[in-house]
Amino acid sequence: MMNDLEKIKLNIVDSVERNAPIIGLRNPMIGAGADAHQWIYPEEYFWTDSFWTGELWLAYMVTGKQELKNMARMRNAHLQKILNTPLWLNHDLGFEFSLSAVADYKLTGNLKARELGLRAAEALRSRYNWNGEYIVAWTAGAEDKAHAESVQGKIIIDCMQNLPLLLWAYEETNIESFKQVAIGQAETSLKYLVRDDFSTYHTFDFDPVTNKPLRGCTHQGYSDESCWSRGQGWAIHGFAQMAIMTGDHRYAELSEKLTEYMLDKITDDMVPIWDYLLPEHETQFKDTSAGSLTSAGLYILSEYFTKRGEQDKAEYYQKIATKMLLALRENYDLTQQEGAQGLLSNSASSVPHSIQRNLPNLANAMLPYGDYYYFEATLRSIGHTKFFW
Image (cartoon, rainbow, N blue to C red):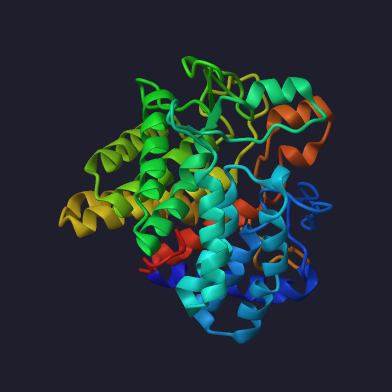
């Protein structure tokens, strides 16, 4: 088994090194299509901008090759531009800066990278509604009034992945408000985004004036009351990470219950359909990004129970994580496919928007976050525990 897992790691590193000169300074956004394994890039900015950077830092971490470090750092000018562009600031600052600036600082001690990370944490903290106890997910622009009205009181499950940036900032500065915001958002997510059966809403709306809770809804899932599989993965990984970083056992227990829901719904091949409550008459698109993310989260859960000395639980979650990881490798791995610029096929960015806009690659293509978590899960599977979260 370890040989198989080590082989995945080597293949991923080879793919990253092979494609780095092709990608250059660009930031992958989405694959071109099911059979076209080349990247499409944003014109200027997209929330996915640092997942490839995270892969470069992971590859540097396990190889020590200076060219990988240099290529990752070449994106620092773009990070500066994000911080200086108000309409680009949203809850995704954690994705963007944990996998870039924080990674650099943790691996190399680069103080300029630390400064970038702390500025991003400050910007993320500033999005917190202290009365409603939530981080406003998206920024309202001037051009779309309906969108602006809909996002003023919206939280989303993805934000669980952004809280480690705040907890890192707290560890670096001992400024209590960073920790307060992270825990406040986690508690609000626990209360409103997690249903009684331990499925999850993608988003939840609060009245932007009174902050009273209004409704759970979706943006990328099948329906408001369905269970978007990547959202469930964000929650499994996010609450397991919160347990590791805060020591609060409740978060680990919640991650466990979210996992049991997933296991009850996942298909026998251990690769998620894009929504766990998708009706049978709908096209059953796979979402390998949900699979890689969930696998990485289960390795974190295993690590948590290892530290507690609960080996039975640790082994249980490790086995599930490894089964999911090997299923991805067996059926969807692109690392040895000639010309492929990413790591995994068959990721579903947003099936509803794919149908609405007639954009097939939104339902079935490579995704940079699916790739990043595939790399992270692989390294966790062979014993790595120090990452950028």
